[in-house]
Length: 378
Image (cartoon, rainbow, N blue to C red; front, side, top):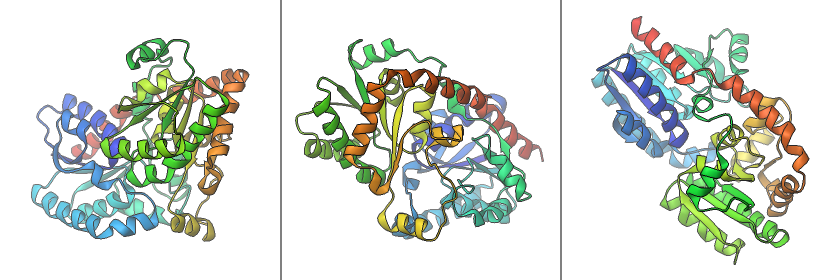
């Protein structure tokens, strides 16, 4: 038996890909855990829903702490009774690392699939991560070297998304599927998947669309929204900040929307990697709660210059990114207009994205399954 605990939509996608490989290579394996719809469809027995772990930021976690601690106590009790052979925490490190430590203390093998961004902030966590986990599986190629400097073994397994995205997405097919014209200029708007994240970005994203539409009439704005709650929140902000600007909202279907887009306004996170793999120019924004952002900046806990995955993977700024108060409608809109007005910037960007795509495309789910099966053998 294998236990998987995934946080939110991105973890659900990773977990589903891993389950498919494990079930193909270990017929009859039982998989239980915290799962989203894709993991459940792949065959995971859900003890709780992945959406319960969709919390970000220091103060935001504190607000949900009683609920999260109650959930973790329940999972500890249930998994202790079930006795899985391997525990795999998928992303959600603030929740999963504590759970992994408790599982390891009960004699289970433990894996953290997706390294926390410990190289970027709160580097003091690295020792505890090594003590809690028998395996650390990294999605980004520069991460194992960081762990090695601290005497901790970690393995780069590539990113399963890189295997799932074609090198050249079919724009015409995506536009036809979404009811968009072949000659439309399409702006994709991805405000995030977490409720708190969307609440902080809804107004500036909608305001940026209104600013841009006033200067470029005829643009088509398309927003893939993960669920009804997110859609209600974002459409309310859109009505307020971009009145009269048509919005084509769809539930899910983010890959089709990205394939159809000319430019993308996106919340920092896995969606920036999906945009990179779709080879689309983007503008990235990130907003934390005010107290969390103040603490991170005041205490000097952030150790990197950039925060978006395209810039981190490139080692330089290849796409504009805006943090906290800098993410204003005017700044975001002007950056989007910069891409639309400068098509000569696109070929070098696409070349950079092609190189990253190839680097990440190494059978991520297969390599992650290898690591889990090695622990089963032990």
